[in-house]
Length: 139
Image (cartoon, rainbow, N blue to C red):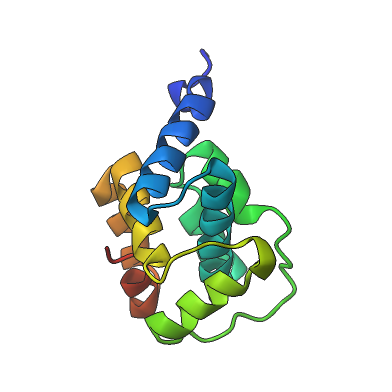
């Protein structure tokens, strides 16, 4: 079996995703953007069971999939979804001294994610998750 294209082009696809997220968030560096993306993924992940999280992760592009699962405490109980404003504050608190995520961070990452993959793939996996999970990824 040949190496799947998603793995052959993973780095290029990830760089395009970061550039899109950076532009949407009006950030300056890819380090700032990476921190924002990482925080948005972590805040979402905290609200899913391991089964739900792995179902979500399997549709992500490879490097985003790796970001989503790295350092995951799978023994932690999921926390409830909160308002967009509260979850945005939580995003901005991840590595707070190095986090430049704007108040639109979740929507910025959601838009870049939807642009990086087929929308129906994301919507299909979100349909099996709680309604609040679907709301999290609204642009």
